[in-house]
Amino acid sequence: TGSIVLALSGALFLAAVSFFFAAVAGYIAGVVGSSNSPVSGMTIATMIFTIGLVWVIGDLILGLGTKELMLATMFIAAI
Image (cartoon, rainbow, N blue to C red; front, side):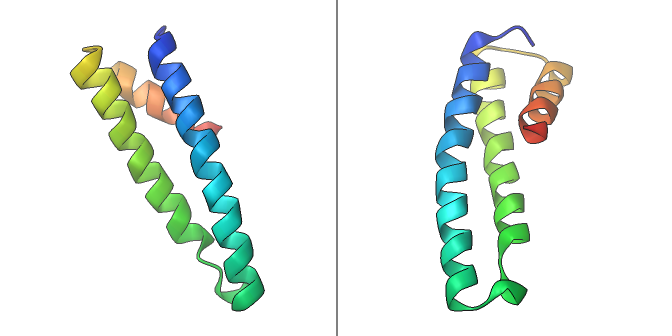
């Protein structure tokens, strides 16, 4: 999208979320066992929060269009 603000905020957000994601998944796997790990639910929750972040920064602050926001979300989700 060409927006350095959106790229940096997405990278910082995912760095913080991935730290908590790994900590919670490791804890649950140790307590419950690997068969009941909530990794899929945490992945969906992370994606929903990422979409919200892209919408707030991209649309409300930067005024990007819908296609650019979808492209930014796809790139962030791919990482």
